Length: 129
Image 1: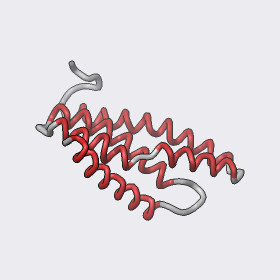
Image 2 (image 1 turned 30 degrees about the vertical axis):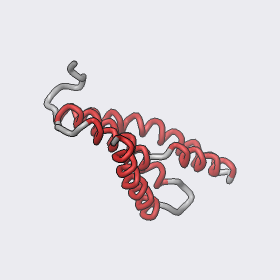
Image 3 (image 1 turned 90 degrees about the vertical axis):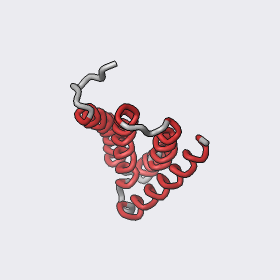
Image 4 (image 1 turned 120 degrees about the horizontal axis):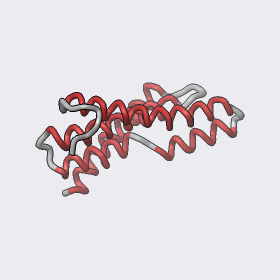
């Protein structure tokens, strides 16, 4: 059953990533890949904490959302290829900016996702065990 949910949610995540690429793609900077990876960081942190604690969604569906949808929506391989292409085209400033924005932005988005989840769960910054 896990495979079915991961597959279905993965198809939806892949379609959403493709739509973002159509919407934000083009240009010299890989903004579509940056956007999906930052959004994915936020969604994974928020949804996995909030849904796991607040909803009655089964573990099978949570795995489908996390591994399937968000896994297919985000892409480390495209990030890597985009970075190398920027370097090879001589766009070193874009490449460095992209790497920094991806890593630092990803950490910030995870923090925001957890903060929102904690706020909606009516608790402070730190997770209560």
